[in-house]
Image (cartoon, rainbow over all chains, first blue to last red; front, side):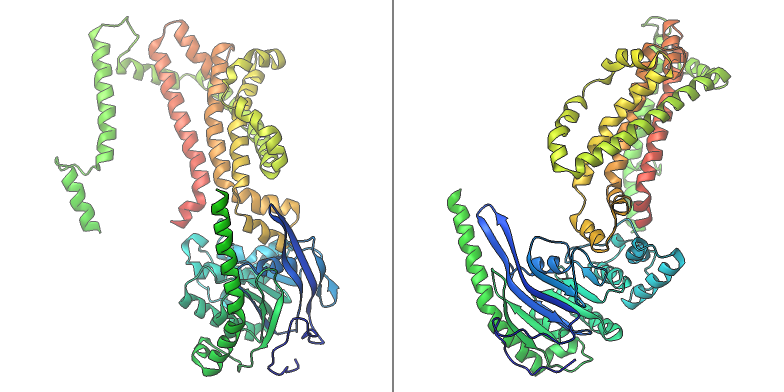
Length: 289
Length: 266
């Protein structure tokens, strides 16, 4: 992967596209019909991810992050633009893309091992082989010993690790995560971030992480894409030149602080726009009543 | 923990009996009913045998249970209910999935289920006799009609309440329709489905037995009404007790089935 110098790039500038990109998102526009008219959720968003790269997409609430997640994952259609995996156009869920959802998504009626084996079962892998592989990924996320437990017996952080192992077990070329730690407390989140770093190191897993958490984005990413508030556009791309292997201890370093401050200065404007917008909408709703 | 538990027990059981207050009350009401029953039976206030003594009921119970023809009737009823549950349950499941899976279908048809559901099914019995004859066929039909409604409504409701993210997970792993139904929809709806089957079993019992008491020549319902018509009250009560036990047993069995994964969790 060619080292790109640390710089700020405007959304209109030529895309920062690695030549060998495995995932290319090109000029996506997605609009929704709402009772108040047409809402443009994402507006000409382009980005690409090189093999082994970890890209974070950060933006305020309501910037269309989750829409982007669903478009790339193939769960949402009716958009303009293209999503390509290794040059091949994606229509519908693609086997090369593995999704980890924001919500609690383990199957409560399956134990940990059966949850993790689920995608392999769907793919028709023989029983012995899929349990072998599932066991490997349960171990990878550090849940060995819990194979026979049910999600209800686990903590929120453990359940999210089960989801992670389940998606990794399908061995996707690209891991797509939508705020996977949003429902967890800050400490668990940092520790799980460590787990993600460690796994990514081990698997050389190409990852696209969608988040609203700056610390998380900087801690994990090689590159951070900052999005604007509605309509969601790419505002900047920030190269994170922090040494790897990393751990959560990096959050106390000076360089880390500088990245966080820089991204926050970009994000701040957007987040406050979002806040104002929401307040005026609430006011408006109040008047309607 | 165990210490406080013991303290609470001894505090609420002044006689030193190791009973929780709930258990004590449960036993108390049974004892009260038995005592009143025997008192009324012995008093002779009511016409002979309307309230037979417990000894007479016990004797009748023993006689019934040791009579081979009883098992023929029991088998008939069990067979009718089983077939009714299969027919009513499966059609209820299918209709429930259809209604729960499509907003359009549910808006079009679900209202009918709500109108027909609470309607006493016995009014269909004459029609069922014409369609399926006086034999077990019409009893099966009555049981199946009764069972259909609670199963269909529970399945439709349960299907709508499935956590949407689980469906997205299935889609993201490219599960086909059959896999979605068997590996996500059905297991995700296990609680409402089991609950529907449970309610369905209750009303299937009612439907079948009621039909048997109306017009038939076999089955437990027939035995009950026969005992009544020859005024063999002890035997009638004995049959009612047997029915009671069977209903409780079947209900517990289904409840166990539904609670399997919860038991494993605790």
